[in-house]
Image 1 (cartoon, rainbow, N blue to C red):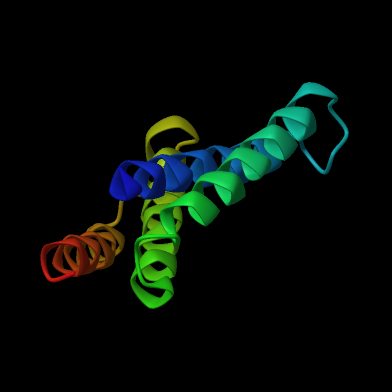
Image 2: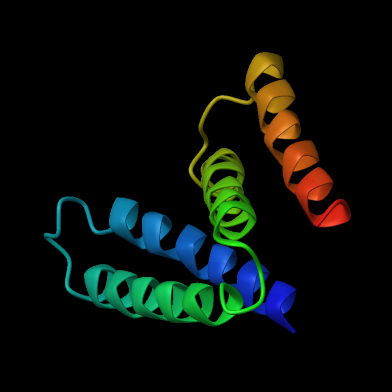
Length: 104
């Protein structure tokens, strides 16, 4: 169950940074509220996951999901560059997260 908490926390963290981007400098009302709720959910689920998962592994996976997820989200929904180098390095993050899961 801890890994489900951790992955869900990472997804909420991707939502957090996406809503921060969509808030346009906090000029809009709804995206900052959704960012706050997503951030709270992310940290709460992370804290539940870290009860069973070592903090070094948990934080690394959570950060990896955030980093890769934010870039992929921006590439898909916000028309950011889909440069082959970016895709390669995102893949490196994903492979690292899978490796941490497989060996912990």
